Image (tube, rainbow over all chains, first blue to last red; front, side):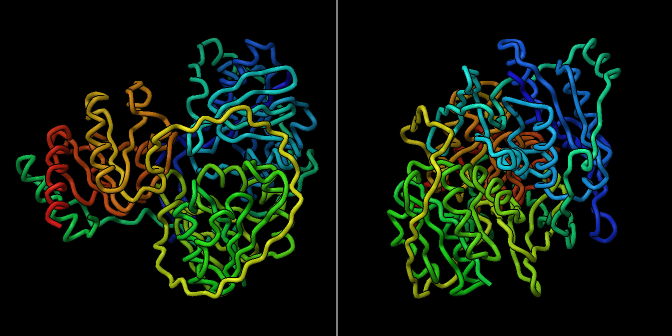
Length: 254
Length: 320
């Protein structure tokens, strides 16, 4: 079985974000990491490598970024990583990214594609299912268990009503939800190896993909300012009385 | 200019987000609002009378039980033919299944996790948080676009007085390649946390699993539910399931009233609740970041303050 992992590089959640140019752009501190859910995807792929002798590779797409994410995947134990690196990805839409990833895995070959449920920066959850649609393969979003069978994977996911188990014939795509597996910490030797690893690059032209622009942003704004916190002092019983009064009379929330 | 809303059933009614989105669509498109109903969700289509100019029901094989692949196969040709300016969906699992692949198939723009919508000239402006809520972006939409909105983004307050026509369309949907092996419905599942109007959340400051019943009691008595932080889900507390985890690796909620009890308020949690309308924080540490998000703050032990709040609300209800 051949497993492709989609690995997105995102700003660390702790990175500072500032609205600049009068709302025209964001200035994001350069602390970049492998997306939280993609790290789970990497671990799930490594489990298939160890338990089912799967061949695993990771691929990322960026406009001058992606290497950090791929080095993390390599350090965790993914043997090979590829980067689709093209300046047009700076301001392309999600479907362009999906087409590029689909074209790449189509060339490289795969039985199963594992991505994350969403990226922590834009929380959009678009690219995974879009890749499946472009490749016309079945997919399941947000899986919390994954078992390989002959020619299929059996996955589970939480639903609004409970839990469901699904069998997906290969080739297929799944996206990882928290709880699927716990990502390992890379060993020092893994980190050393990742630093030296050769990461092959492709451009959109190499893959025969034309970039479509993302929707224009007419403006960025900082988070709305709340009115400031009103602190309520006193003993618990007094605090509760005052809080309930404020929620009822002032906030009209009760 | 027409706006369609993909209605989503839950049990024997539509999710509250369906009503919100139909209301918002009526404000912008008036009688050019179309409610799109697929498969079994048509069972209670009477509830849509007055809420849309038209109800379009898609009927055919393979639509029940729900599967993303079959539904996309049914919906795509209809949208291709009708080309509405916007298709609105409520954020949630089904939307995350359908919307991205549907957008790819139709080659139209897609936005998820949106919280605001307005018209500016010929364009629609879609408002959504980015970078974990550290900034907000206004996307300018002038072509067709599929947009998913967080529940509780809009008040469903537009008049529901449209003359509603109904159109049933026979569609041929492909069988899903994904096979449903087993489906477990959990009995007594609570109010859906993403749609709840009141959510009482707890973190490590709740001390132990037993105390989560205080949150449950508070949330439930106000018609809502309770939620938890990642820390106590990962610690394996009973009653702290991932399905009610709020934050980066859990659910995103936007209730009218949020209580954060024994929660410090790191971004991993706040990005899942920072669009709540009214925020109450209870924490022993006056420096806890949660107070920066709060409207009302109490420095104190949640285990002492919560029972007092519950008692006070009981009295309020008794006197009402």
